[in-house]
Image (cartoon, rainbow, N blue to C red; front, top):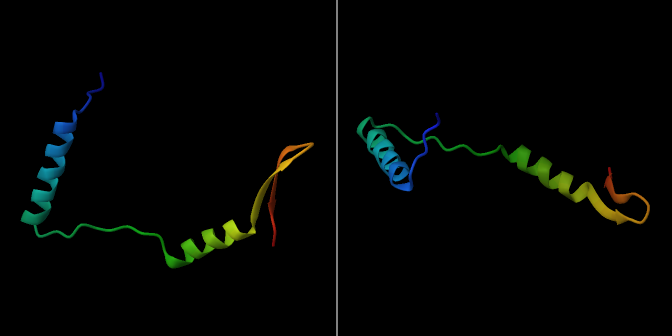
Length: 64
């Protein structure tokens, strides 16, 4: 049987986790995408086209 957590339990868990991180002198790891990944996504969004089509519903194109 799965157990459900309440908001209070989740808050307590987060506080306890932060306390342990400080006690052990650990640094919280931040995760972020590489700059090249963001550039690739932005370039794709510039080349991508999604338009309504009278005969096909939607027309998706990637223009190189």
